[in-house]
Amino acid sequence: MTITDHRPGAAPGAAQAPGAAAGPGSVTPVLEVRDLHVEFATRDGVAKAVNGVSYSVDPGETLAVLGESGSGKSVTAQAIMGILDSPPGRISRGEILFQGRDILTMTAEERRRLRGAKMAMVFQDALSALNPVVSVGTQLGEMFRVHEGLSRKAARAKAVELMDRVKIPAAKQRVGDYPHQFSGGMRQRIMIAMALALEPDLIIADEPTTALDVTVQAQVMDLLAELQRELNMGLVLITHDLGVVADVADKIAVMYAGRIVETAPVHDIYRRPAHPYTRGLLDSIPRLDQKGQELYAISGLPPSLLAIPSGCAFNPRCVRAQDVCRTEIPALHPVTDREGHAVPGRGSACHFWKETIDG
Ligand code: ADP
Ligand code: MG
Image: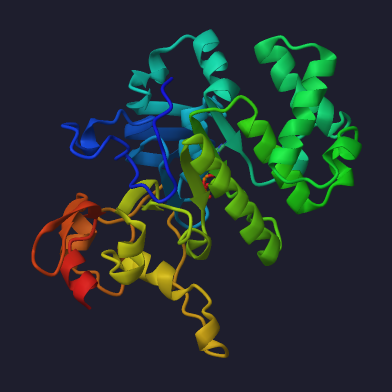
């Protein structure tokens, strides 16, 4: 593992010295998902939860994965972490590269060692992810006992250190407390501490703040972003809330019915969305300056994954849909700026992305 120099504000993936021959593309991504397909065998048929997802994350980079509930965000994460509910779930196609190595071809033991030490996950609900009958100090310390063979006492000291690091007040006094004795926000910090314990190279945070109050949400998100920068980790931040990612993400991938429908550097997506679905998501963010106005919501429901609509899966809900949208699955087209230059990292899976971006 090489820790590249990463200063806050430095462009992601561009940590080389200025003038170095290596371009941004020369960094090995910490994670690369290629054409991933995941399906579930159900009583009613095969649910196609993930249908050709590709994304990558460089060291020190944050990718926000966005989309309504049921779009396949968590299933993708579970496939990456090797915690897919299988059966009934099954990866039917694709590759998952961790630091350039395909983890789907690794042995169970190799994957187990990666998990926790090199890649870790933060879940939405700390209360069910933490063990209720074991003190948080013991749970945090366990990471060091198992992976680094530390003594009970040394592990406890590490646990206190970690609790300090995620800014839990009076860590020393609280290290023996149980999960239910902490507030929701503090529990989420404990789970972040757990994920960070062994300084992994990749963190997947699945709706890490969704269960929290808005003010606490921002604090926990800021903490996560701060630690991620400090440790130069890759971060996949899964959320259904476009509002929370603007300040922390470098780039965004929008998912719909198990496919990526738009990718973009974070600011481009707010300024000029290139997919009608993204536009709909943006329009449904509450804005302080529009108090009292009715909130726009995308009409209709996400499709059944047992019978995804032909063509563009979004077509039944789309204001722009034409015949071609009902017959042809749109590829992720490169998206150009106003001068007609392709924008690196931008793509839209809409037949009418040009009209969308300009309209
Ligand atoms: P989200 O984008 O909200 O995280 P998920 O990735 O959790 O969505 O789920 C996508 C779809 O995958 C679900 O709507 C469901 O149809 C299917 N799915 C997920 N987990 C299971 C499971 N354990 N058994 C059967 N189907 C599942
Ligand atoms: Mg989910």
